[in-house]
Length: 329
Image 1 (cartoon, rainbow, N blue to C red):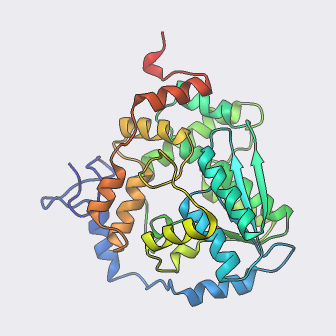
Image 2: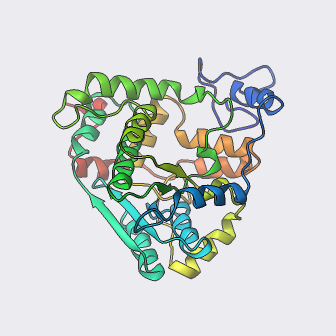
């Protein structure tokens, strides 16, 4: 059963539905609406951050650009709307979508900006261990910890304190929010890092969570990560048309959720997360967008419908060189 207001399924103890079919996350959100301080998401607030942190070095900002629509839009906005010289930063752990990389290549060429493309196979051992031995651990969470730390490191090396992300309002922390719906995944991630990953050569200091990354980053270099999408009301269709026209952006032939741009490992993450938890962090993100009035429930359900089959899973498993636990002979 799903919450009748958002798209979260009932998954005790984190997500519970009341007698009206409303989840505890939505109920808590309604309570906080009247209690929390109003967070100002005006563009003027974004401009204050830009004025404070940009222009400190060769580059006005470092843009985390995966080639997806939102991150490509962030790069475009920094260059065209805010007239700040950005450095596009793309990380590739060996499983990035080729069409997404082509989107970045087109954007940086057309916009005339520098591109830092970082490719490594160093994370493959961690991914294999998750798939083979700890399928309850969200691959995307481990990857997010890795690339967040990597981004902070490069910002410090380049002395660029302003980091721009393409994160939606559904990925922004709300006042008083506890993220109960992600607690089980976060605990599984922390256990895996502490008990397994840190025992592998080269992973001894791998962070357990984002708080640990932020503490380390502050000791090295003061920087801030912010997304223009938190402050601008941009129509999705108009934004897509703009990027298609201006920087030749194209949606990948196949990606999950529908209309998004994610790496190949994302298919395995979704498959395993649905099996172990009944939902993914995309369900959490879109449920937030529904509560904020940024997305309809119908649109979220449509985008979250599984649009891939086992063929995609098997082709990625073959590339990474392992099998799912239940398939071991």
